[in-house]
Length: 69
Image (cartoon, rainbow, N blue to C red; front, side, top):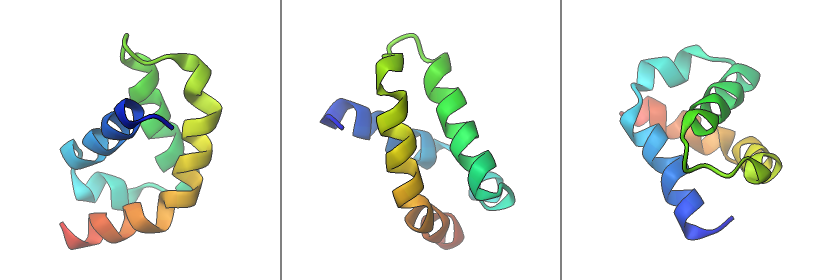
């Protein structure tokens, strides 16, 4: 993933409420993030598979960050 996409991804998580992140199961969390990205007109949908794979590998980190917030 390029740096712009990484920033976009992590800024979504930073802007979201930790309670929201913690309340979703893994599949719902991934779908929620992807839905936000798809709604952004600057997001190139060709990156969906890459972002989805990235999310799956970062779920434990996302959960840890949500608990710390």
